[in-house]
Length: 445
Image (cartoon, rainbow, N blue to C red; front, top):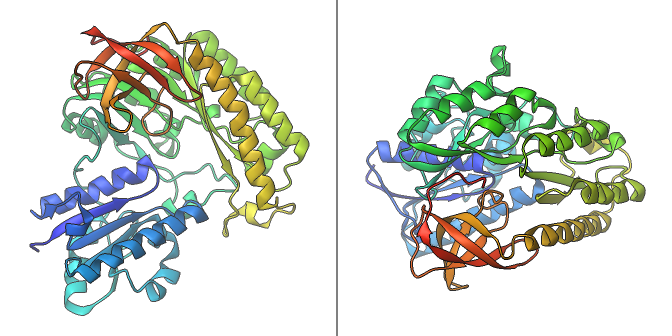
């Protein structure tokens, strides 16, 4: 098929990797790919369905893409990812703008389904894939790449649709991951992702997360490794030791906590409790000086009281985490929490999220202010034209989910590391100027 393909990829970095596999399948067939969706004859919308807001965003992207048909260039829209995987029964008859519908593992079905759509009309190809994972066409900056090490989840948190969408936890074979990482080429920062990275290998009988980190660290083309989505109860002494002693592992952990209060944690189906979380954070600070900790919290979970909300605010003050994300509880059908009594009013959830952000903003502002006058190693991610400066990240700033470090320099190259003297700090970002020399060292100093 001599067609030009474009893609809109929504949702998390894990979904992004799936989108890159679809791009790889397109490349394998010798088709052209454009960054300008207005020039695409076939538009792929890689959807997210984790929350209602994400589903609305996905539908909006499909409708917006469909408007390009009026220009006479766009011919077909492929709807793929979590939305059709979970809701194909509702989508296929109703969403007439979509021509082809694929699930989360239907990479190999893309071209057969498109051929059918061109010949006969709309096609529901969800579940037609053969399970093969195509080689990816990386869409991120050359120096930063994601490695998805597993799919699915078996934590079964009561608010979460992921097990119903992605299925049970499946670790990708270690030899395949090593081969994939080698094939990514020179990579300054390799970001390990999965719904729960720390359970890698458990579905096969033995946790092999630390072993995987060690093997990836042996690759000459990988300079640094960042760990995301590390569940608190699976952060073992071996993992802590690996983060501490492995010079390639960035001293940063993303640890989804979701709440601090035991009653809410139990209702959420979470396995950790407040004292265990507190002990873990203290241990990480003690064992790995300077470690940056990030997490997410849910506000307004069913029956959450004002006292429990205030207790979470107090926990933030105690924990002094470097980065936090806060989300209002989204009531999702087909989850156990949907049926819980005591659903919190949307206005109350919104207020609580705002109050949590305010508490964390004060913590973040104080932490970042401590860097003013000091020098940090910063990797350059490119240019911010609105601010007329370069933009990058220190070790405690993960791409797209944390703040940034903006800096001036006579010139700077994307993917290179610079000494940046910090001149100013806000609640989330740092501002400074690059010193003349370029430094190629560890990001945790």
